[in-house]
Length: 101
Image 1: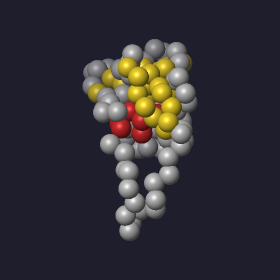
Image 2: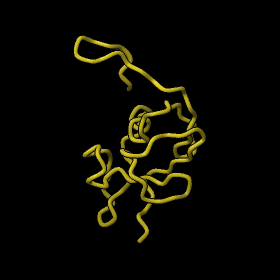
Image 3: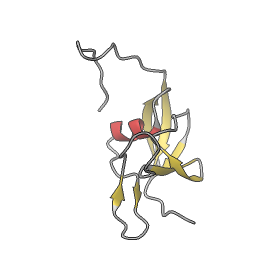
Image 4: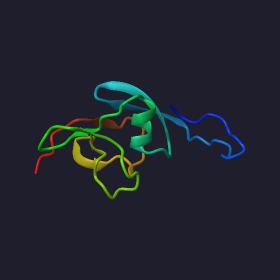
């Protein structure tokens, strides 16, 4: 769910132009300038990957690229930090991919 209106505590919401991305084979609307993590959460995707050892769900945690919990596969490139990477038109994102070392 995205913030859609301003309040006395928040500035007016400014969105980039709408873009279409594909998440696990489904087309999702996102906005230029937002991160993959923001787009995923707005689309209701809450599990970004599974832990390597116990296959436990992982998602956005720190939001600043330090913890590596939000890794996804983008356009075939594995282990991209979704909290630091901005969406782009026609981007292909896959979640819950096994980390391959």
